[in-house]
Figure (cartoon, helix red, strand yellow):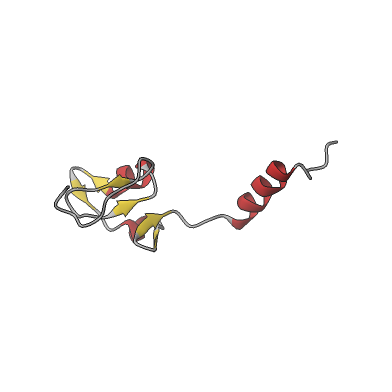
Length: 75
């Protein structure tokens, strides 16, 4: 167990310096600048249920769901 009280899933990234939990490696990488932790909200990240994530682009989510459901019209 790490010194942080959180335990990341295989898809998450936990910063062992500031104990912030990220939804992925890109968020973790973004918040580390010159070897120091920077508040992820400075980069537009939001904390949801203890995990820092990029805000969802609802248009992209809708497009993805349409593709997955097979209802996308082909031209």
